[in-house]
Image (cartoon, rainbow, N blue to C red; front, top):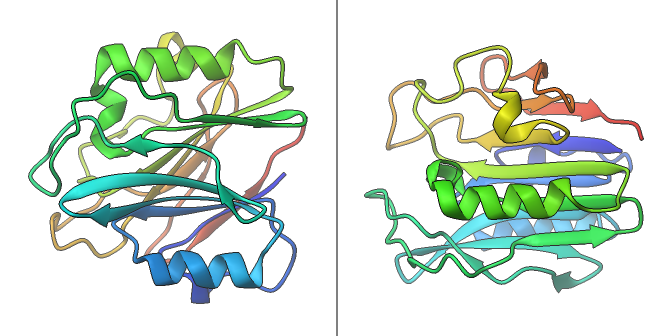
Length: 194
């Protein structure tokens, strides 16, 4: 599976891409450009609507999840709804979505992660569209008790008005080790196999 984490659609190359992840707060127009240029890709993003952050997981012209960020963080208001299930399975791939600070909402994130982990799919992915400061995910390996068995793809803003020093985007292996970490403001890509 070929994966791209990009801050804007113009940074995508023309080659076939299976999964595109945008940061939280991306404009819907950017998502539409990616859909147009990569119609067969799964696209994950979080757009702001009426003060709430809405998760998108687009595949073949449809949004496959109904998800409003649970926790408020000063950027957006939280929905408080922990009954959502932002998980999509397609063939041998299962994709979960947690928007930014929702990775720290114990009850909600645990339920979403467990839904992905218990999937029969061979490739299990957790996508995190984010707008995080540098203090998030500073270790080279994510905690296995939380993310074990799941590849984590975090796409963060490279130039955030909310953080002087943003967290770097990254992709992990199924053991939580960071395979690819963003350098400078460049988009990142990785290839995962199952």
